[in-house]
Each structure stands twice: as C-alpha cells, then as structure tokens.
Length: 91
Image 1 (cartoon, helix red, strand yellow):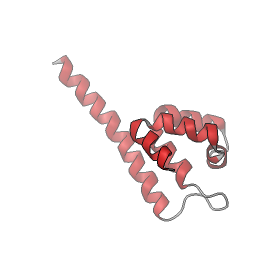
Image 2 (cartoon, one colour):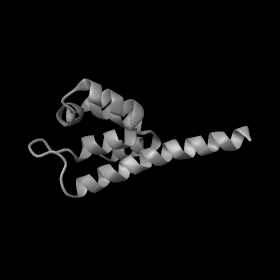
Image 3 (cartoon, helix red, strand yellow):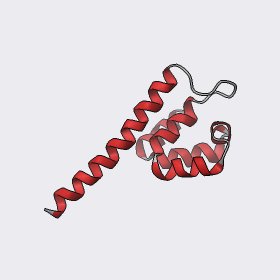
Image 4 (cartoon, one colour):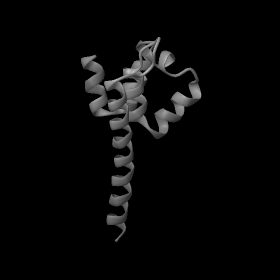
C-alpha cells in the first residue's frame, strides 16, 4: 500500500496500472473493462479512489464515499487549472 500511495502521488494512472497488474482490485471494483478504461483516461483520481475504497460484498461505504468525492473534485480541479494555464499562456 505504501508503494501504491507513492505511485499515486507521482501519477494516478501509473498507480491504477500497478493496481491492475498486481492485484484483482480493478476487476472487483469495476465489472466492465470499459468503465475502468474510461475512468483511467478521464477521471484517474476518482477511478483510483473507487478501486481502493471498494469492498467486495457491499461496494463503497462511509468514509470511502468522502474519498471518492474528494478525488472527483481533484479531477475537476486538474481540468480547470489546465484550462486556466492554457489561457494564460496564449494571452
């Protein structure tokens, strides 16, 4: 888990890839490959938080929902800051 946290700090997509490669958490959390692939491309922090917080019989619960929502806002903020930086460079 510490290695996964370090990889997530560097790149959430790298952490998702390592999680998929060495564990079955991605298969447990996402029943469809396409949903996981779209999450990997569009919302990597949310996808990673969902996979880590997902428990097999019950899904995401309690504090896990807080982490998933926080990750969603981090994804939205990354898109917003990228657009703001692009506008600043062009003017």
